[in-house]
Length: 67
Image: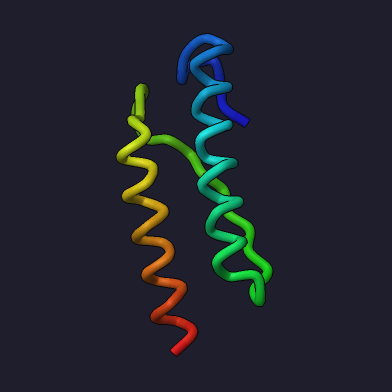
């Protein structure tokens, strides 16, 4: 859930859709794990590339923890 402070409904929906797609991609890569995340944007207008970078960092941390 995002508050109205993040922006109007279409903006919030775009953010949630992007995060959901990236999370589904991450769970497919690590199907042996049960994952759950809570994401709270720290600023308005987070770009898709910033989200991709954050999920890439999360993926690296998961891989390191598996070792």
